[in-house]
Length: 88
Image: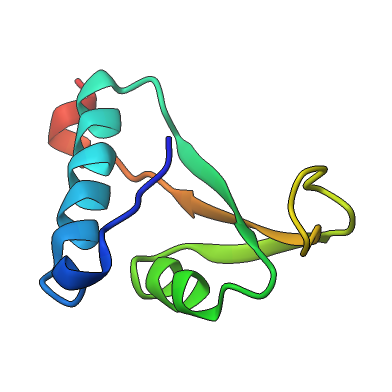
């Protein structure tokens, strides 16, 4: 899945809402214990966005992308915590 917001609509919280909905959907399914994603290493805005939303950088991969000019990426991860009352 890719989250992209057109430039005129950025800074309205749309991407955060989309991400939060994806996290909630994963929690409802109870099959997901963590979310993992990759971000191009030069995309500082995306890195800040995901870190603000609870993702941690886990790895730096060299030459990950084959069709992009900047080929390196960071792998980020977020643990999904299901509230105890929902686990039953």
